[in-house]
Length: 293
Image 1 (cartoon, rainbow, N blue to C red):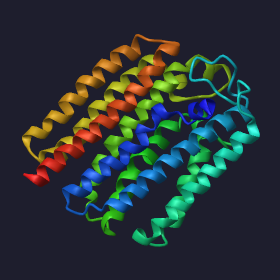
Image 2 (image 1 turned 180 degrees about the horizontal axis):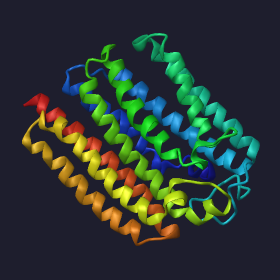
Image 3 (image 1 turned 90 degrees about the vertical axis):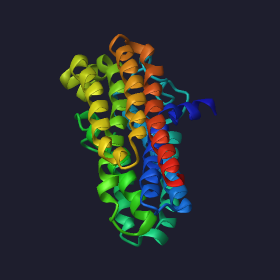
């Protein structure tokens, strides 16, 4: 059981939670918040991420890009703790459960959500599977921005009210969340650069190098907070406390990342995800205070 929990990559689950929390804040700002579709979106997002994590482990093993003794988190399939067949079954079973949860959202958004849900499931697999795995060709970061930022935030907001009238608020927030989510992937690839390069896995860190992607990590946080400023100013000047606190944590984590290597980066991956979740929770808290007072 411990190996399966490790394969879920619980340290990164705040990334999928953060997108739905940010969407809840956007909906509450516009007085369109609804609890049940928000909870269903949260469950769907977490299941989709777990399925993606399982699939990533299975297909990287199948494609021969995982090696024993990697610097990163222990890979159960590669190390022989979990059979490849069991991991494959877990991947598709988790996707199936996510699909059932997604079908419940049809009551709020209509039948057009079916291809959207299908695309989410497909990209969860294409991240590591298929003839052109996205994560192996420098496209993992873009995929994360889209499917952990733009899609969950804007779609959850849509499901609150059935139209796109809040897009002027949700779109910049979604891009900001996506950029911060992509930073989690940057830390992961920053740690694994040598292992990935050795097996021909061309992540952005392999392509551009640690120094460039270290600056990209910092820059993503700055851009994300810049995108949030107009939204936060709609609340009050006090809401500028949010980017101030986030940037303090962001810069602290960035400095530790650029001075760390190997397994020392594992807790910083979780710290990056924690910073993102804290940012969205603060955003939600300030919106609640705004609505109350």
